[in-house]
Image (cartoon, rainbow, N blue to C red):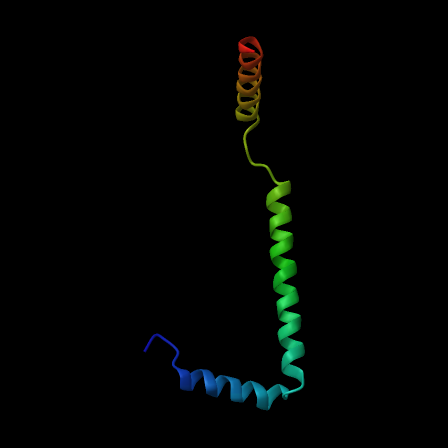
Amino acid sequence: MGSIGPWQVVLILLVLVLLFGAKKLPQIGKGMGEALRNFKKSVNEVDDATDITPIASKRSEDVSKTETRTEEKKDA
């Protein structure tokens, strides 16, 4: 009862064709695809721009990177 069978999909597609017409459906699909693509792009840009690492943690990472580089130079 929880899954959609093939007859339900056919019925949904038939109703969509009757409501919007065969010419309009590709335009609707294209518009929805572009909207979804733009949404994903903006979400990724926000994730990249937003850094939620605490400042103290960033400082300790910077210090550990500097110490590692110093040790590498001494070994060389």
